[in-house]
Length: 85
Image (cartoon, rainbow, N blue to C red; front, side, top):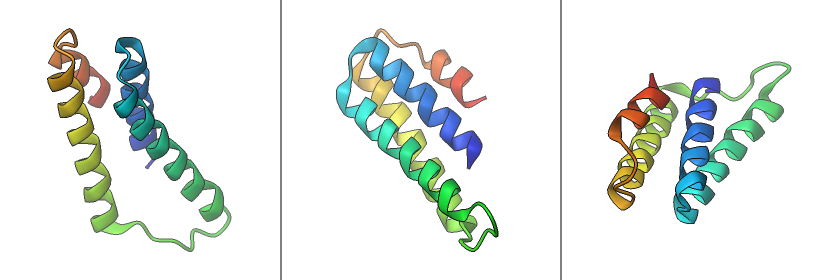
């Protein structure tokens, strides 16, 4: 989940650089929700994210990146590849 938080932060940074406020707001909301899960789950790990949560989070991140590239042609798809890997 920490990696997903870094990826969402990278997408937020890129969306802010091109001025896409919708993707920026969704990415920041995603970062804050993952951070909230970390804060409330820290001492004992009572909340289990599981496969369904991980797949959903990855799916949301991929669609955010696809929308970011499709809406802003000045962004190279290789920049998204570098953020993810």
